[in-house]
Image (cartoon, rainbow, N blue to C red; front, side):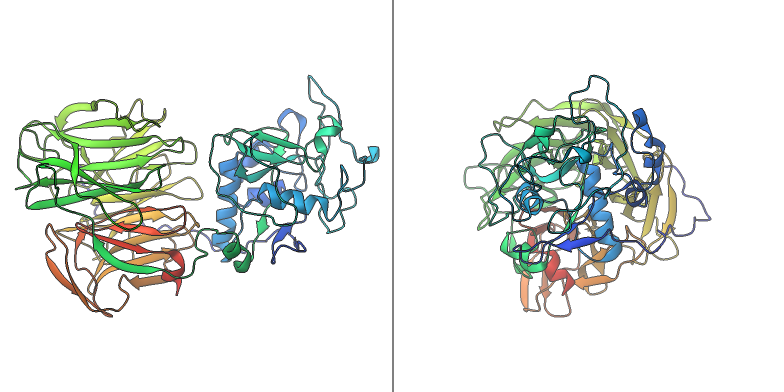
Length: 570
């Protein structure tokens, strides 16, 4: 095992500088929706991503602080919104197509909000150009529309939240809606410089691949009111939710092998709108009879367990699931050469959009340490897939990190070691990685590992949280609303904590109980326990996913918990 240093780095903190919110105006008739008066500028965006300054002046465009930022992908635009939300405690996002067009028109029904024509004095090279002609992208050079919004026609195209489909009806001007982004393309509105003027019309619709970074393309932000988000069905808008915990390990009814010890779950949300959970079932953790079972949850009940994966006569310790943006699902699996979980090979397979699984194949074929799969792989903003595995069978062995840069086709073990086994990992706003794990405690606290080079070296520091031990596995996850969530165990049992500043502080910590006294079977190493207003599940192996409606689905070794961010914030 790679030793951890005797002297640890100081805790890594994110500076709590004052963040300036871009000017916004309220859009009439939208239940309090506020929109940025201008497109996001270089100065505003680079407060979030300082490295973007190196792109100023690319091909002669966007050099100054007050010019519209360009060369920003849809994911990066959303990341800016999430960062601004975390820094301010408010909620910002991209506008939907409907919101954008409604705001652009400002009550007009003509081709442009200036009438049937767009004034030539406001043109910025409005023609097709084989070689784009550099022009100033300074915001607010010309008069705003009737609602105080600048550059809704031209300057740069603007990312919208929606997916774009040519078959979808045009947005309603009277009832702007906020659909979730699905599909391969993202909507783009407003037109840009170096574009014929007809593409600047209020109703002109375009699209781009979400990874597009163009000199034509930027974005502006909106701040919806809580009332608007609730009326438009946004995540987290259904009020505080904590539903009665239920078992997800349901004995098979079809003769599927099923044993006394059911443990180490993984879970994901499927394109069909169900939860898929998997776990191993065995007589003993060093058993060769081990199988991986599955169950699905349709929103009301879990199905009886069925067989998910088996390599007969081999130990099958450690599984993970990851649903990709494409809708395909990756399954990662440890496969032993005998009955122990020390010497495992690392295998994977993929489920296509038709629901068919490819054959299991090895991505790390050697039966050795560093291959015990941990639930909770993530995809970074630049498309890397990160998979954590225990670095060895010992409780102090730490966690290895495996990375794919090509969608899961090829993999590389970084060779580094995260502090603590069973680690959960997240990407922070500045691109660094942060992981929490079990064991390797620092100054009597759970360890934190931070990497600034993509996972090849790590700095270690203590967290504020108590260490966890046998029969316990944590979850560290970024919620779709932006905050980080840690689910772990303390003296009173299972709790969740929230961070709005990428782990520098954790102002919310809440016991996962609704206060109702009930006795549950936690399965595996947990057994029977009683939860009430001051006690929650004492231990269990956790995994987590979040459904599009904002509900957080947390599984322990046998129990399914359902709650949302609004409940945690109460």
